[in-house]
Image (cartoon, rainbow, N blue to C red):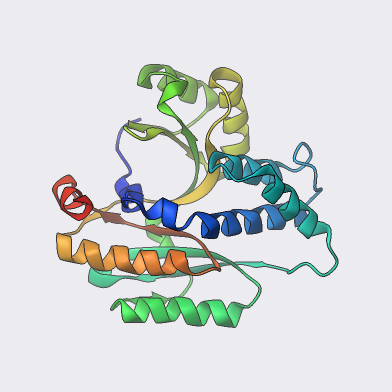
Length: 248
């Protein structure tokens, strides 16, 4: 179980999380509403809803917000959101996957295409870059869950495929179809995870220099700022020396 998937280092943006807190809550609420609509509005009977609530709690989303999002799913006048995936290339040919929940496909497609174009990238067809990613489950634990060896042993026993431990926590990866089973097994051994979600994990990452990293980070920031966009994944690898300069 070796090999650090460095795609997530794009998220290390100093101070950014505070500035988008309300927007993040809005996106989490949308995920909860969609999950509640997909089954029963009871998290004990709806695995997708249970995970959506768990992930919202991990971001300190207030209980009132969570309850409102669940109730919204039961409303006859509630919006219907479509899950849409966009794929393309950013500056320097870096592969990008964008996941959205939208009530207006035309609006979202236009916005996403515009952001790609302004960044010097190009939006492609579905499947144009996803072949170079694996759709997997990512189960995240804080460092307080135990040392790397303990978490590794639990992950192996639970049926996970890979574990990465760094200064931010323990990242456990498993097959998409096995995500619920593995997360439940881990919960019984080392407690409840911070987050459990499906992600697109790049099979291979591409190192970028400072100039290209700045362009790509600006592009991904613009994508994440769009109300309809839920997640952005790339195969970009920002080397530690470049990341240090960008974080200074």
